[in-house]
Image (cartoon, rainbow, N blue to C red; front, side, top):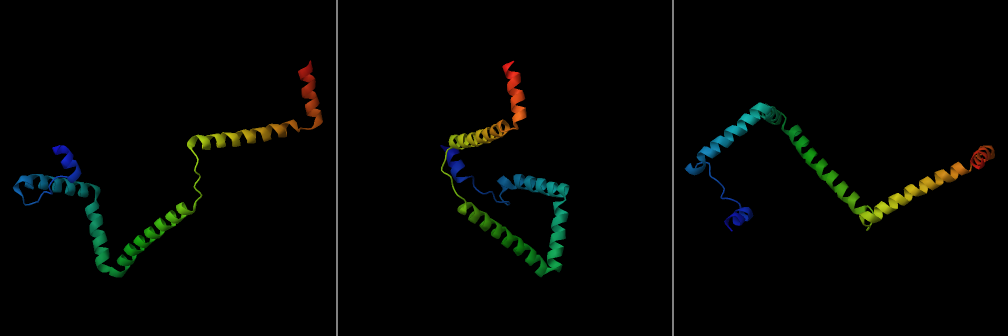
Length: 130
């Protein structure tokens, strides 16, 4: 029952000054800094911060432009999904319809082949009767 309670409510949030979690906190922060340094995320953050400090309006326009563009794209996708016709058919029915369409195409192709010029068909019939 105790594990279930931990799963639902989670563990107590550790405080960085708590001696019980101090070593774990320092270890995790060190690992995060090492990863950021290896991936050069720290340099990227410095570059972005210096750009933001020197060009405040441009930076805000970029950030809010990205947010507005993302919101607009999400709204477009929601409207597009909502206005699409929702076919209430099962997967089996869709497969049967697809197979039926394939068979119709095949029948049309075969019918077109049987409408070949008469000379070709008569040669084919002569070979079959012999």
